[in-house]
Figure 1 (cartoon, rainbow, N blue to C red):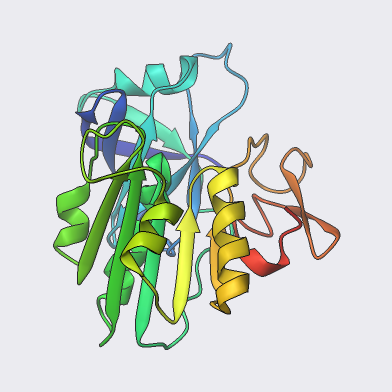
Figure 2 (cartoon, rainbow, N blue to C red; figure 1 turned 180 degrees about the horizontal axis):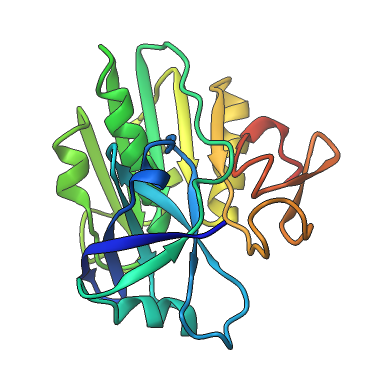
Length: 247
């Protein structure tokens, strides 16, 4: 089922990175941290919706962060407040944070999006939140994390800001640790973090980024191996225990 959302703003916050806020009570009221929505292009030649993680949400709005990487997301970038947009209900199984003292959130690129919603949820507890954010070149959404988290660390591949290198190297250099780790980003990053956490005996939840067809688990287009069993990222995930994924 598709729902009509009213676009409240759609702004480019970094080169080819857009932040879109949508008003849609029927979708927002059931949102959970780590979930995503399917966004449907108006161009009928584009058959598949685009799955985009929830970056923030309230009782009547959702905010999406997306990169312009193809025809569909390029269309989204042209939308204005005069437009409505077709979206699905919130989909997938999100993060389930345990009751621990220190949470470490590690995001790579556009993968920082669901971690902001997670940070906002964790901030309701008496707990320490550390964010480690990795970018290719230009950092974005940093202030939003700084407003919530106790500590924020930045890495960039090209050295435009912060530590030059990847997030795992930054974690090792700064001796960043916690009771629980959450990560979202490219698969190589998730794999290396999961292996590191297993070595350090730190539990980790990872939000997988896979190409999807339907978003409901019917097309079997986004399978991944978890505990040697096929799992659908859209339905059984996108969040899994990193120690259980067959990398």
